[in-house]
Length: 303
Image (cartoon, rainbow, N blue to C red; front, side, top):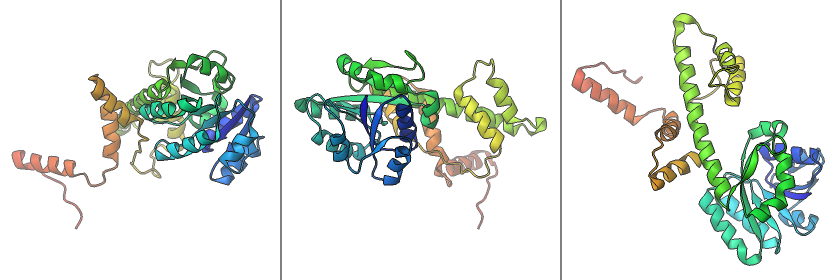
């Protein structure tokens, strides 16, 4: 199946490589021409523009857009849509906000262009292992892209599916990423407790490996943690600053709108914010209050 693919980051490159191995003809474009050249070396056809991607495809055309969420997505998706025709399909495989996805889909209905949202999990390792794919689409349109989905998935009939109408794929991925935040936070806190028990001189990589074979808390995430701990157990080269890509915030907003309590998901997001404060006002005030009511000592900053 022919496919246009726009946005070649590390994950996009791995996805294109998997599609090529699956026998698909893929026309790629990225504003960074070197990114396109990388996958062109693997067999993709490099396009010089979005228009060039469209002209290389035979109708009905399918274009996968892999762009960070926000105004960039609106810009690229809008440009793609302007050049497509009735019966063509746009797939948004980025981490877009699901309400934006619904809005974009509605904007293309008058032209007869179908807009599909696919939540993609698997990271840079998905190129080899396959991707978990959460798809929001009309059932008939979903069937049209099934060959692409089956190639990207881990195995036949495994790890993918239509989860609902347009927007449902990105909504599901939003919750997925929020859960991911909480799982990462739980692992990180647990390993910090192990590391702090200096009396035992615990080998964190060994413990992580033990836990990942037969344990209730075993997971692929824990397997990656083992690899990290084996290479750099003290993280001397890593700053204690954790980014978030937006999905956790959207999920917490949804919990408030739906009045569904999500304390663990919320705290995991808040702790990411805390990691970015090298000079926390809250922590200073807490220390000052303890000194005021209990006479507890406080640590002074360097002059």
